[in-house]
Image (cartoon, rainbow, N blue to C red):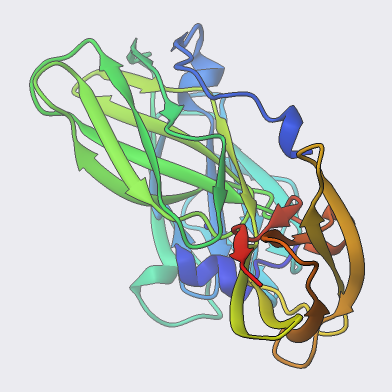
Length: 314
């Protein structure tokens, strides 16, 4: 699958979403600790340099729009094809029969970002543990979420890497790093642009650890403002913002009813700039209004959304 330009630039049912909680995990075996994934994108290999154990594999995921070749120097490497060429969106892997450092490159590309190495060792690193939680399971497009947790054992400052998999990407990509506190705690604050899974990894000397993944849902930002009130009518302006365009999409105009729920009074059609202006008749009392974007219209990777409530006094 091709990595979207929006996702690369970022390197980012509502009621059914539960509050995220810290989830500890202890790595139990070599496969969980050492198998690695390298993503091939328009800017090269990420990460370029990885470490595994003898007999384990490195998986290469081509998220670029173009085919790429991975060429290792020397012997002792077995890949899923020879030559090892991955079409756009394809995945392949290589295994290593002996310890050593194996350098690789894409012979068709220039620059250091298309060169890397695989370090293969016979000694299993000690297993560590990590937790991760999100400050909110659901955010509005453009808002930040805080991802925090701890790594253990804590031996002073430890480099903690945050990995993200925004919809619809197949592989995780490292997006940020931070040093943990003396107690092993860490925190990242960033705005996911679409539904995204996050996890952290750390390596401290001979100890490696990885957290489980936590998912943060994103709903498009829906705006609503009162442009004017005149006599028995009001002019409202609304719009929808995310990485997608909503031109031509339906948006529900709703009014608060006497039971505290919302009644749909009109279906609006968003214009070229994902906005709409509507004139409504006002009853002889104060009314509350909002616009609602159904999940079917929100787009892949997003959930249903709604505007802030606007109070209109006749």
